[in-house]
Length: 290
Image 1 (cartoon, helix red, strand yellow):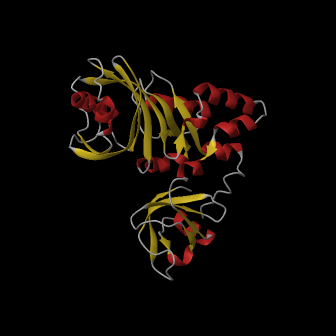
Image 2: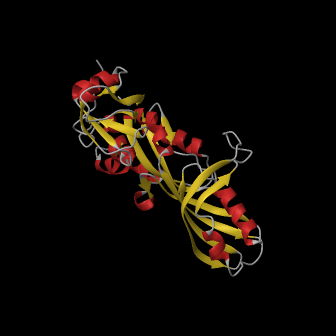
Image 3: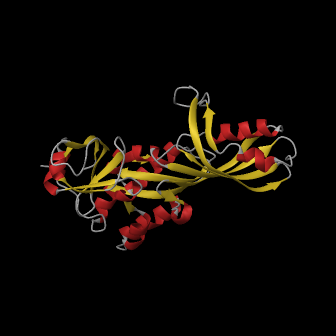
């Protein structure tokens, strides 16, 4: 029988590192993959995964999943992203630049770049908010909140075409990826120092830097299941109605997080049935987290 984890806030340091998340501030230069390898080696865990790729020159919010938490990487495909970008115009900014930028709020059609790992098919992505923060000569500062998978480089190129000046993306910084933002970012130096303090007996700094992995699920609807149901899920069974004690409102087909009554993550799955029903499958299993 698989052992279930205890409450997120009541775990040993080893348990925290084997199922934790770091809201990392990626520096410019290394790839996201290289940063993940550094974090893995620093933390002394077998696996570490980054949540959403950032190009080498791009900085900012790059959550790092440690140990078994790497199984939940898909949750970052569900939320929104936020960026601050410098738009490098090829000619002086036109007087109507703000109205041109505003036209790109809503659904935009993009084809992934040639270097992308995904198929280069035309696809739609939603830009939720697009603000022109500042303009100086041939540079404009943009804040973009958008659907996951939006290519900011392509967005900047298209804005330049619409403005009649041409443009490309300059510096780019990610300021949020649901449910994380830039209010509590951790640098690689912070993580290194925290690990050193922990070796000397002071765990408090590391507990401030590494959060229980459940934090990465806070933006998803939750389904609370009984311990007996959680033990069955740990063996690969779906979630059935009799095992559900409570559930957030969610649409059928939504990705949900199943947790025990003490809020420990058990699995990710899709809502396929009525949590209030007396029988039947409620959550189809996608990833076991225990």
